[in-house]
Length: 457
Image 1 (tube, rainbow, N blue to C red):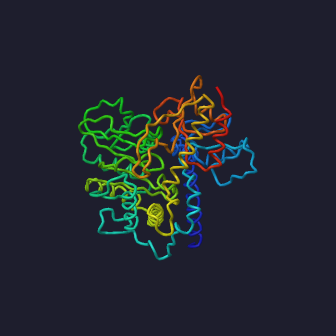
Image 2: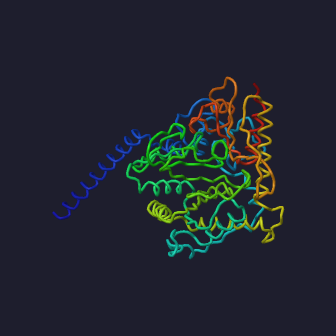
Image 3: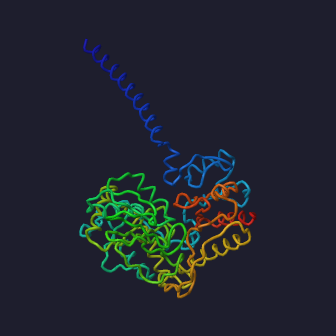
């Protein structure tokens, strides 16, 4: 009798388990459909994608690398923003993906640097959650903090004295932490967040995706006329158009977050140290190491720095120690290359080499644009750079390209030529504009220029 009862129980437990699993699969399928959370859409969301895959190449400007590769394969095309490039490949079949700001241009420098940038981490290292319990940002590695301060002093692009350093998983997490920290004291929530067009597309996407009760996206500064507190996001040099930015609203109750991801000598003249309440930086655009996901904030107010630290603590329980140690080594190499230590010579200066490389790419682009007569790019003023001791124009990490004449959708037009870009609508602008990464591998960029030279009005 006991055995029969036990068998009956097992049988019914299995039946209930199967039923629950079927119900769960149906529920998840329905939820995914209703919320548009399919795998492709998740990746599209990350890259600001808002439309279906379509026409000649089969995917739009903001498709992720994964989706782009998948669809290119379906079309019998080859994606060339990856390591599968070969001189034997047919250029006509390649899709040039310059949508993302993937800074693979810097690979050559770091290959030549060799063991100077190598970090060895033993199995027993970095095991604790804590880096420095006496520091406000308790997960900040002291070595990383030291190299950040050293590099800023060498370059002269930011004030570090009297600032609290907060490390984050890229500047994206720090941007969210800053919004959280600035919103907590406000009584009239959600607080409005604004940025001048063309604004960085990820700002709006993150804010609208999170649907926080603390803050809301309020759009272009030119259209903002609400009373009360607000947060203004200022990217300088700006992503996507490259211009130096200042606050626009300038109203009482305003709080500012300055994103200085591109305020480095390879992109723009360093005219003076930035000195603001909250300043964001990222390793990805400094050294090109986007994959280690490390950014930092220089914060003047101690309470704001505490809140930002708390946000990161609650969202990810700190920041990877291994990534911080690697980032520290990379920043050390950059500083050493300037100060000619560790067998570095003057010709090895990372920022000087990078500056000339970016300048050469902009020269190629302007020549192609002038020859085609179909496009235009912004003109930037000359300025004296205290780091290079030279006068030059801003040469942004992205090109803000405009299709002239009858072409109304520049993104779609270039896509027909197998060139992927990010359209102006993602930045609050006309579809006649596109953003193009200037930091991809040489083979990819050269093919882009080659194709541009074949287009004529």
